Image (cartoon, rainbow, N blue to C red; front, side, top):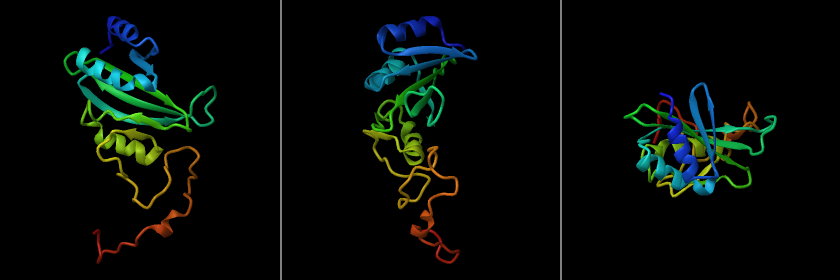
Length: 168
């Protein structure tokens, strides 16, 4: 469902540093990192966005017109009104730290771990921020656009598993 203009207006009054846009009848809001935790609380408690659908990231390396390298994306839903909202925070490569959404939506736990693992975004206050897809020995973040398609030869660092030994 299309989010109401009244809701967008309330959000902009509450957080004047945010910018909003609409595409394909979906509302998109870009917030500054400093307001992120407060925006989370406001959207959940005051506006009914009780479901965190997804957390992902976009690498804008070499993207024409991009001012910051990463766009951290939160997809939110209000299960009573069926409204959906895309929340985005833009980050520079020099400072990839944002507050965790886990205190607001517990479902952010594994989603943030995946973004950490694949892109290297650090979520402060996360209860268990460790790799979820790649082995602990892996030192890079493979969904970054500057990561080579063939890898960097990291496999020699990984333990060899056979059918007989299996996983520990």
